[in-house]
Length: 423
Image (cartoon, one colour):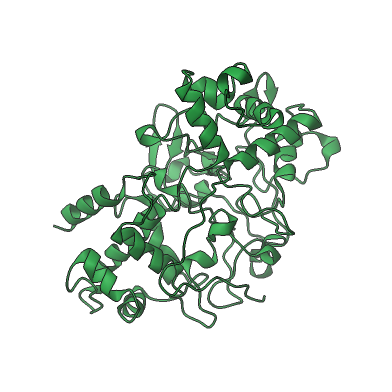
């Protein structure tokens, strides 16, 4: 019975309606939960405290991003060991699985894929409840979360969506309510407000296809600009950046394949890779575990009996994120952090790392995990020594800025903006 219930809910929330102007009731409910400070405290924290819309649905506090980039939990001295991944476009990731043809793991959510989708049929729904109970995040039991929602301004909306008596916080009912909470959050994260496909690249993509060009030509800028971009939506530098991106980046951040239901590209293969990222010396994990090494996917596979024998072949690999909204919020002194540990502080630094990681004169620190570092050849040159001139690096950065969505979500009931927590 429970499995049938979850299948029905998956059908309800898994389809994205990008043209919708207003949220559906379940999406509105999920939004209120997402922005509500439900954590233990003080200070109170919400999902949005670490996944802020103005920063591309990742960490929105410059003072944290510029250093360790790991956000504190509801207990101010409690930290995890990774920066928040973006929650936008995460709903497109399939359930975690092993592709025996390629020998690669695919899907799931979070940097190591451990939100597999095996529990609720959706990695996003599986992930949604994890931060509540984590002592380094919201640090509150699911039953207490249920009780807070029961006392909230949107409790009536909950029962409107899920039916009378659905907000059951009793010892025998709160776990079922937890599934409803998870699916509500997942519905909001699948809504057109979180994944609107409203960037300038999306405008270009639609015009390019409508002009009769194929997806690969549009997504890799393979052809004359006048033919692919007849409305001149991209600057010359941005278009050249797409050319370079198509050659050197699109194998992982897929720019040339339409998303589900004919949507524009999601810009991720949903696979895992170790690109040789150095450790972030300001990561607060080293204060209590100086020898910490983040094994990423390999660490998660150690906990999965079926695939533990493949763990060492996947040490250091992290989920390949979408590059949509990687420039969101930049400017006016706001700093973002990049990679799983936030070691890089600008897109310029990220692109230069990909280009020169293995060039001794560039002076990059060694990888945190040396095993399995990707040195694949692109256009005959290896990742880490792509030999791109400075103007090509700048063009890629300019192109990445075209991936910023232009929709600002409205306020839910009683929303309180996240704030910095002193260390």
